Amino acid sequence: MDRISQLTHSVLDDIDNCRDLESLENLRVKYFGKNGVITSELKSLSTLEKEEKKEIGKKLNLIKNTFFEKFEKKKKNIEVLIINEKLKEEDVDVSLPSRENNYYDSKIHPITQTINEIVSILGALGLTYEEGPDIEDDFHNFTALNIPENHPARQMHDTFYLGKNSNDYVLRTHTSPVQIRALKKNDFPLKIFAPGRTYRCDSDLTHTPMFHQVEGLVVDENITFANLKWFLEKFCRMFFDNENLEFRFRPSYFPFTEPSAEVDIKCKISSGKISIGDGNQWLEILGCGMVHPNVFAKVGIERKLSGFAFGMGIERLAMLKYGMPDLRNFYDGDLRWLNHYGFSFLDNSDLSWK
Image 1: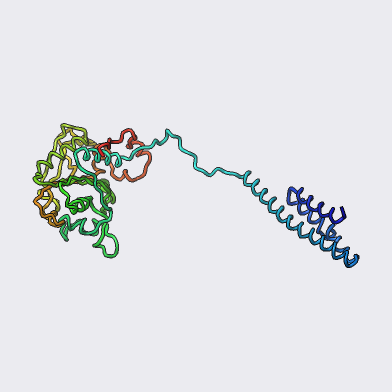
Image 2: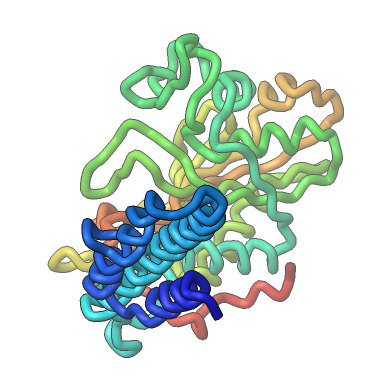
């Protein structure tokens, strides 16, 4: 093997054996420094014959190009290894440690539990589940429900209006628009209920800007107030689990029903606590009435039909049944409150009727 071939193998072997940047740099100086081996060989070319100079110069340039190509690759590989080692030494687990399973058990929110109970009872009483959009137009939310133009419910301080043309769309103020949509299908007899979110500009101890309601509607021939009375008494006794619960129907006014009534149940209020079914005091829990003839007319129903409707606040029912003093706590997101008032999944209502 000639001298140049030996030099080539020596250069390549030395690069392969380098394990750090310092030794790699020393190798560069050894071969290509001011007094390096390859540098000296290149300088000595001037003493050679023309043909020999050309041949050896070509080989030396090949060694030089090969060296620096492998040099750069080796340098990058060593730098990557250095970075990986450093990262390994400084590795930190930034993931959030899991909570102990027994600290906050999964609980069903009281509103969800109450909705499930209401759905289960109304379904067992023969009503069908219906739902509608949270954003409603003026017709479905007000006009079709016989609510006049000057009614306070249409005012900006009571209702969330949407868009520049504020009279066109609103966040629904009740779930009654679902009744209108069901009536427009003109498919009778009609027996439905509609739980859902509703919105009003209100916030205090017993009101929140967003809350839940459930509406019920039964329409057929020869439906009377006696049917309404029996139905609501049956529902309330099942919901509060009290067969001896006493009721009072008080005359009231709602634009979409005539006659209208508010339903009170007997209770005992002492030291801020309410005991349902005891004592001699009365507490209002829902509104109801017979469907107003104008409502039928506004959705184009010409048949001789009658029907009853009712509506109730789901948060209010939950507060009364489970003794929750402040409506605002429902939406605080306090896990301690949920851990106290929440329900086990084993307590969930039977929805097998669906």
